[in-house]
Amino acid sequence: MNVIWKAQYGNPSFPSLGLPRRDADDPTPLATACYHPCKRIGAETLQKAMTDEELGGEYVRAMGSDLGQLCGELRDDVDWLRRKWSNFQELFGKGQERIDLLNRAASNFFYFLHRLFFEDAMLHLCRLSDPPKTRLRTGDRENLSVLALSALVSDPILKASVGTKTGQVRKSCEFARKWRNQRLAHTDLINRRKGHALTLPPVTGNDIESALKSIGDLLTLVEDHYGHPHSVLGPDPWGAKSLVHYLEKADKAIEKEHEQWRKLAAKA
Image (cartoon, rainbow, N blue to C red; front, top):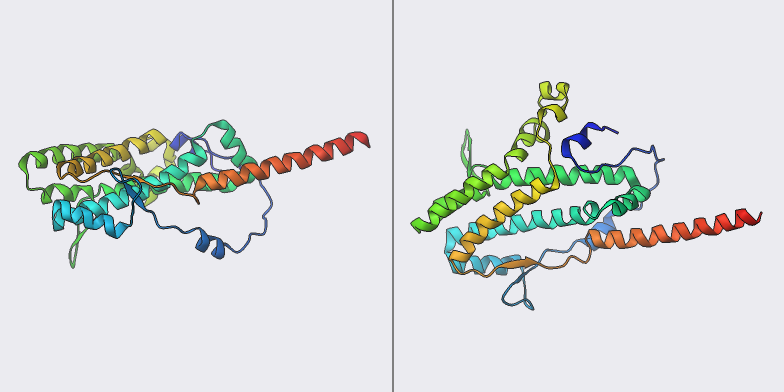
């Protein structure tokens, strides 16, 4: 397994053990059963779950059509990234004991998953902090980006504050943009031959979380100005925590079985 990747990201990776390929169950029924749309819960009314459409309507009522729609869409997209990253943290951010459990279960698979989570997070941060428009031959294409907020804010004081926060967002996401431009969305041939770890900035989970916080602070600034209540992500009963629960049960059952075999071998 490529060890350069470990140095690039600065996070624990999983060794290639050359495990034999195992037959897998058909993933379609599992994927269908486990899909659950994210619901947010308003901080002021924690008992009332809100769908994406209902929450979007609240944004428009508080901020007006254009700004409210954009801010609601951005919050929805940021929450999607937060949901993905929380699953990453549940799997890989709980210490060496958790890493050992994943290695025992399927080291190669979780190596791939760790890498995919990290790369997806960086690409997502880039999308959120891209220019508000992309120029094409057929005309400009609008992007869902926090950089589009400032143009829709009419209050001069808020507009200045949004501009400052937007600059902080761009700076906090710069590491991800370098990775996207040279490795994730395009493969820079010269840098690849030199070795990515030598040419690209190392990335840790703190970098992702810092960028996420910067984007969240910008959206909260706008939401607070218009009196929009904060929202929190509801619990995810079918996320990584559920997977870890069953992995732990299986790990204990396997260890119990091995112990029984050791006792039988000792008696033989």
